[in-house]
Image (tube, rainbow, N blue to C red; front, side, top):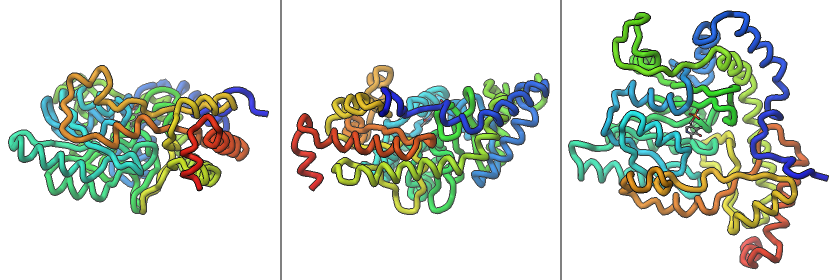
Length: 391
Ligand SMILES: *Cc1c(COP(=O)(O)O)cnc(C)c1O
């Protein structure tokens, strides 16, 4: 039988196990090279990752949050500028906006994919353009949340119409696609995170800024190392945000297996969906023309606390990403002005539940999750309403 907490939403050891040997030799290669920040491992990783995405340039950074702030700085965005994004995201998205002193402007999400709602985006762009003609929204940050792409063709069209920059937050979407084009290749710039729990993670912090614009890439490279063009001579005021050689070497291993791991996530998601089809719960939908890489498998449930406990009793841990939208969190709710109606954002965060979907799950793990959840949904403790819905 299944032991308590045997099936985890995040199981890094299990995910890394198949490559542990390769990763160890990558780490000792760096140790033996005597070059620990920058150097050829970073250069090679940047080249391989940009080729994987189909973009011109990738620049390694210290984290995904830094990749976002570097993109903003390299685009010339500055303190006081308005940047539109969503409120149901990792707090990092909003933290990066505030790191440069810019002002987050929230937009609602689609109920099916939990990504930026383009009608809400249009309303916000229009509102700020007319209400503040000298201070319109300057940039938009769509977040490809849970591995599902935001509606990039519509967002790019709106961005063009309103003259705003687009910086994609790809921290949860390594390998995701819209119409065959990778997330990270759509916007003027894109930010990736290689935090260990992401679809492609290192053994520490790391990130990358990607773009097709050479001037932007050059600018970002300058800013991420003190504004140096020539060592010790700052051309511009910069910061320190670099990818370590060890992380680059580890990421070169992980990149080789990224497609295969994403396929396992997609297969796992399919199995969960077929096992939960008759429960009446809202299961993940993938928008037409999109490839989701299922960073998370997110369902909506009527009584989250009860179902989480039932699953935990059967050895299955679950998670809630994210329990509270940013604009309602203590650090932000008194400061950030909200102009849009964030109805879907506020409603869904009380109902979402992330089930394990990582690549190291077995077929019987997935079956166990689906069966346990199905039983719990139809148990007498939960209102009869679900049973009705499922018929
Ligand atoms: C993880 C994450 C980030 C931040 O990445 P770090 O590497 O942790 O700084 C940004 N945005 C989203 C959506 C994330 O999930």
